[in-house]
Image (cartoon, rainbow, N blue to C red; front, side, top):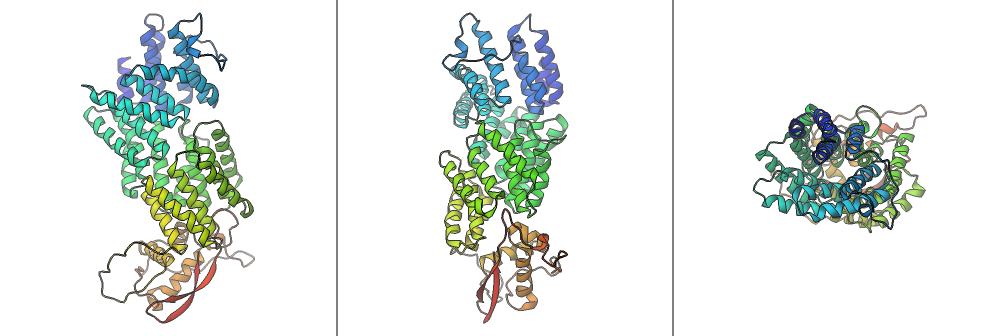
Length: 535
């Protein structure tokens, strides 16, 4: 058992699971208390590995098999007459976890609620950590934060804070789930410092993955990649399915936040589909909304596979696993619906968000709705949604998304409130529209026309128009930072009927489709007037 516990902290978790499960079975008759301890640790090893069957097998070692028993809603599971209190406790824990894993959260709450209260009353760091884990399984994020916060205070007061890194890992994850990214980042960084003092490489991997998720909406891609790779290096060596899923999800969210929807969809596709690379059995469903949005933004037609994933996510959300999921389901349906249905779905999603404290997901819905309105030439209504998105992202520290929402807001005609940095050169000054500024910035980084179009959710034709009229050779906008050869203007592809290929700006009918229109724009300082297709 001792070696199994050591491997659980710093080794292959599949080996730890097998050793601890063997210990639980060996000690069952001679030392029931240690047998149960080994069983709980074996279940933790299986969870870390993403081994669903192994997790259920470890739960079954906690008490003699008795099958799942019905629990009367007006009866406390831990107060059954004629049963030993300890046996009743462990039976409720085992059966409750079984129910949670099978999606029966109503019954899981009835069984695990009293268990959580017993653990909570003991005021010990290890017991409170277990209570916080139960609350996370039940989707009770507020209770999880409260219990884990108390566990953190107790652990910090101990001479040897053995559980400190794990408590910080679970607390940071609970804060991520609630959209509290500032706090999650602080606690994940503290956890890494604590883990460095008492080497626990598997906990380090989990903390690095959580930190990658926190920075995926606040930091630069290089920082996200550093934390994610740190987690993946250990995860691949030790078989950590949970850390791998979170790290890959973080990389995809960073891609999506920086406008690279195609890469995000490619990263997430294996996680959300059945197969050897599917994500952790308890986590992959939460990555579905990110995949849906990435798939829509790639510009390809939404297929039956995406619709099926949304239906699966909706079924999971209806079971009460995540309080903010019902609103997210409506947003996903709005993204793939036809024009006549999308607006009602966006409005319904925003109404559902009002009942849950989830600033990040709420802001994501405001942004998606604002983008949808702007592309239908309704800029006044779009600005209302986009302002709310900016404020929501700013509240939860989602700097990457704040910038994206602010750029959308300016493209919708909002007057900039910030003062531009002074130019270092002495060349002529040219006032650029917000859309032109965004295109110029992307082109200066070496993006192709198609990549710019996808990053900014506009058509390739719009990018080509600006390339042709505002490049240095045109004389219209000498202040643009165009590279000389990195973004050549390419002929657009056409289909057999001579209509434009969707890959190069052809008509798209679903999701974030681009309805182009033209308005007269005066280029300051040049005396030239040209028609500018805005999106």
